[in-house]
Length: 342
Image 1 (cartoon, rainbow, N blue to C red):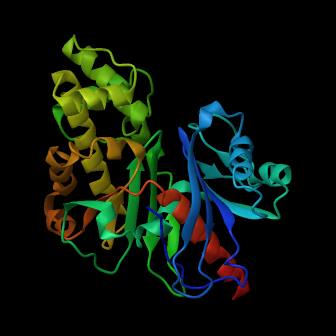
Image 2: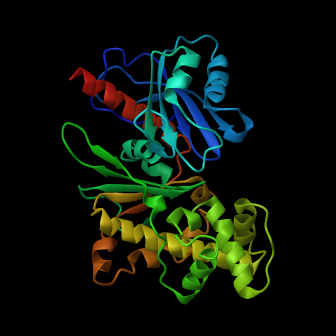
């Protein structure tokens, strides 16, 4: 399916195709994109490919491979949505990427005129408001959002989050490092798991548990607490066993994961004053689509004492659009270009 997003204003050359990439800790998604050329026209993904980042020496090699497969389409600009924290020199800090990312070095290698960098969940937040109803699973709250800040959050190789705030002439998106905040627990079992994780790290960050590698850590902690259990080689093996009902240990580990996620997202909704909706993204959630609704996620999300009623008024939906990061990077870049022309 062709991905679409909307942008309110266009650069004079907006109809020219450009590169948009979504760089995560495991996968790199690259698209050839362009906008329509007048206000309200969707952003179209003309070509798209998903790469395993560790199979390439760097991001420049990934984008170069993609461009080589386009048959000579003239390109000289693009946008990169990347997990991590941007530095003043244009590079990025990330503990989850297999190689460093420097837009300047990539731009010079590819001969691009311009290559911009944006936080990956900031990019997703730019696209989240345009997701079609067929591309989400509704988990909690009313079907329609009110006006107000929107939260986009999700576990993948790490844990990303961004907040989209309505404003004129265009929304403001705040990138966050919520994945580095301290993990909090509610139940006795969660607290016991946290203590096990603290044997390795005094500061147990949210993404240390709420990510693909985090699910592995939770399961290993559960095995130590129970004194038994199957040792799995990947998060996918744990989720597959839990979904198949093949291992109670895997099911219990995934249940703890979903409960912690619900509690964390509920805390974030209150911290950021979210009213406009919550969108869950991240690779691992797509894998547990059949598990999440019946897990403790929603109850833990709502379990915030007197604020339960407020949280019940927030739509919570699971994003299922595989190209959303690419679309978001493109939408962010077009808004950036429009701003420089205003």
